Length: 428
Ligand SMILES: NC(=O)C1=CN([C@@H]2O[C@H](COP(=O)(O)OP(=O)(O)OC[C@H]3O[C@@H](n4cnc5c(N)ncnc54)[C@H](OP(=O)(O)O)[C@@H]3O)[C@@H](O)[C@H]2O)C=CC1
Ligand SMILES: N[C@@H](CC=O)C(=O)O
Ligand code: NA
Image (cartoon, rainbow, N blue to C red; front, side, top):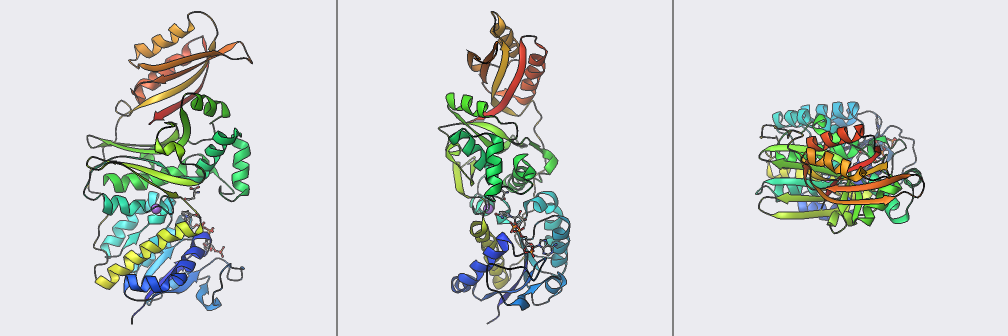
């Protein structure tokens, strides 16, 4: 019986999980695909490194050509990470007619269009389920499960590291710096956690979700991004007092064929299911015109969850090979891109202001909101025991991003406003 041969680029956290699943579930996989799946060669940086799984040394190589130029290899799995070399190797593999699976969100968010165009030309499959919300089958859900529907909103907790940090800050009252250090020690955050905490990792994932959900090419510059490094214990406490949890949410919305994408720390109503997604877990909330509201929850990272998604892509591609339908499913975006203007992006907002504690201040502040047609849902004022200032917390009704920017610019000019301490989008 013919077997399907795989070249693995990378044997780190995810690559090791892929080997474990392909070997451990071989009998099941054969039944699902109709033939054996064999890992033929594995690219690593250092062949001498100690590995946590037993492997014949002949399978390991430090030369990418052993995989890319090997005519026996049908499918290349890229789990080495990085951009330049991973992209080059994927393009070379496709040029030689090989199908590709990748877990690389940075690469697919920035160069996915080029890679998918070349794959279409060569009738190759490229699948990347693990790139968003590691173990949650969210990309095939959007592509297949919701192929009958029109998606209007995707809202997700798609970065495990930041969700771990925010959950700990919320549940234990710990400070951002303390929990970040802990997340690094536990191996959740990267040694350089900038991409996680500054929201870029989530933005890559939202660009991928938006592209597949709205059938429109979303580029990274279309996603407005704010990370969690400015979130304070105080913000979390005030949020909780008013019935909110702070989550780093990726939000992709479509209204009248115009779209908007953003990543920002968001006050999520405690009654909303996303508010109770804690720790390194991910969840993606999808609204469709026909289906209504749905939510997908699970591990967003880690060896075996991520490898599960990689191997499910491998199975899908292997089935296509067996059926002779490779490269026939086009994921190319077909809608023209129209981005919402700041006048069209609408949300509720939470503001925490430090203001002079004297008569008439509140009325000066609320007049600014009224002037810009931003109406208020609630206002809470309390003295600050540590200084002569008072703290005002305001929750607005739905207001445009542009309207809110006008309000903030004018509040900054008011003498009575000492500090606009924080501003959050509100959801739920
Ligand atoms: N870890 C996770 O939970 C998740 C990861 N991903 C994505 O999966 C990909 C892989 O991540 P992960 O497994 O954590 O990464 P690791 O750093 O654990 O592993 C990378 C592997 O690739 C090899 N490698 C890296 N660069 C080269 C190179 N230039 N030449 C040859 N081999 C190389 C390394 O070799 P050596 O072993 O010799 O050092 C190592 O085996 C990334 O794109 C990541 O974003 C996606 C979702 C979750
Ligand atoms: N650093 C990422 C890993 C998975 O993509 C995260 O924390 O979610
Ligand atoms: Na996924």
